[in-house]
Amino acid sequence: MRARKPSPTTIIAVVALFVALGGTAVAASRYIITSTSQIEPSVLKALRREAEASAASVKPAAKGGHIIRAVAQSTKPFDASRTTSPRPAKGAHLRADATEVPLSDASWTQYPEEVNQLFGEMTVTRPSEAECPGRDRPFYVSLYVNGESVGEEEFKNGPSQTEETDVLGWVQGTANGTDMWLFPSSEAKEDTITVEPVESCPKGHFTIDSITVDVEGVR
Image (cartoon, rainbow, N blue to C red; front, side, top):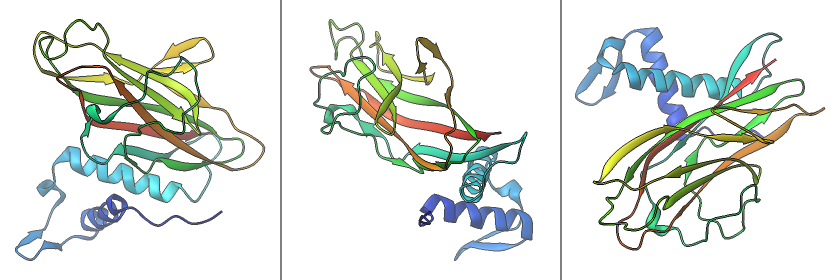
């Protein structure tokens, strides 16, 4: 298996954990971190998840155990006005001309005898009805693993511009749920998640503020 270069967030995670476990470190030329209490709990939690996912990428989960495989995250807010493709048919494969949301840590290794569980959430800023009139569900997001459709999420416009956070919806066969299970094969394989948004507002536009997908290995 070809080793992947560590992402910037993984490097930051390792540095943060070194500080947490080793004591004092210089975070910048004028700021010294002497305790994890100086780091926001939410930031520290995210950094630890990143570090765990990086360490887990090179070994299978122990029998009866769980291990974080990946923490896929959007790299910055995504303006949905950039989408131009029509809404894909339900269950369709990822199109070659699809507009994708840039994600970090979006690929991982699934080992033999290991089931992977996917779950996550997305925060969206939606336009008002005045900015996007006459459209009940003008924003649609498709989720793919290795180009195959595994989930979808729809967003309505509202009376005013608002921010909304939803748990991602996954589709497995004929069932819908808040998580997705990838069943194992006889050998290790690389998996990649892709997010494709489609918008149909004539004026105001949706923005994906953030999206996170956790991948957990279970044996």
